Length: 278
Image (cartoon, rainbow, N blue to C red; front, side):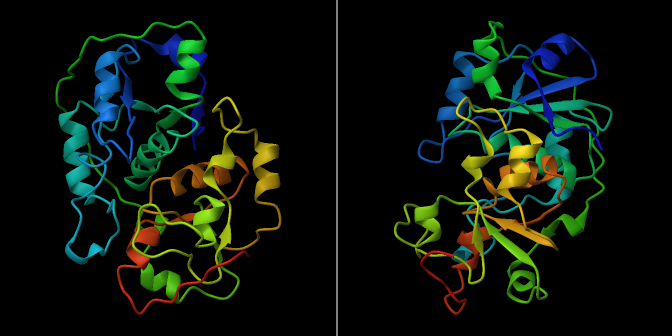
């Protein structure tokens, strides 16, 4: 399996490659138009833009089941990728703007892996690192000829609320949100505060260093030390947890994603909620 990360130097060397597709995934949960506007103001040359809510999620369902960012149907996502000029033959590089905005490129990375496409990497350090390296940005829009993307979904990569509620003994459930949200002290987005009973907390932001790059394998292994057995990661809506899934892969561990995450869990009032520290 290919590396989940590529350096800005490695990407710069591949610019102009006909087999390369660069995807700008910048987004803001507070301002859904911010990513698209940032793309227009300057992006990595040759990049196209995919929106978290319009392209990389299904519409929200009545009652909130499936979470705030439900997974798209595999065939629907495959059609969008093909329409954007991304086919099975392409090497895809996703980027965003870490650290705070560093969860959106891993979402695309995870989605493509879920569709059976391994030629996908996240730009380590994102557009911030690109700029700091002195590489140019562009305001020119590009369009690629539409193509066909054939999805071969890896259904085992994702779990639902029922699987989480009845997971076998020894399963490790990782809550990827900020510690204060995990403890239930604050909840700025979802209607209920707290965490899924039995979950431990590993804040996804701790997968990055101060510069917004993913920490090295040794540091990731230290973050997840002692976690043996099946791992399931979740967050608020199945976005930031994908950064932890990527970090776990760097540490040599595999994890499945509870895609609906906390926003899906609390959509059913009878599901139990825990508060406080681990």
